Length: 214
Image (tube, rainbow, N blue to C red; front, side, top):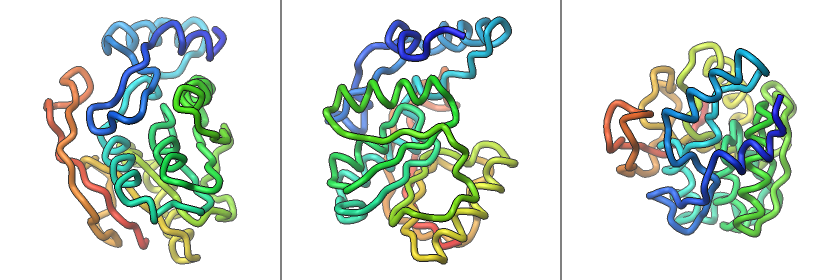
């Protein structure tokens, strides 16, 4: 397997997501070549799909909401689940969170989060552990764009429901993925997020942020 930090650095450029211009991330400048490259590497060396290389709509909306509503995270222990590029975690840091844990099982995402935290001069802890089912030690849990696959969404939402009932503030950013919960959510805001047809089925995705109560 190639060195994750080197792979991230060599295959990205520092760019700002359209909805969150105050944050810079190591992002892919061309979508298709990187997907193809990692598919080839996947067969040879076990490189997973590069979800970390793109600022997905749900993450952009959630990051924007957190920056505009810092009281959701300020002074709090925060978990950014499925962190990917670290966009939402970085937004939480900039909004004044006291402690941020970015959780992503992908080693390349972990490298991207570390590089992006450095680029934005914020401190973020990273874990590759699957935290689903763990005791909820966080006051706020942020989840951007994670309801795209049934098995993962089912496990995740059941756990998030337990966390919410235990007192955690759970915020979801989602553009209407297939397995987003149909109940137990309160819409907090909606954004039009610029995307690309290489990743989505349209160039602008209406994306909302929700409070999840389970």
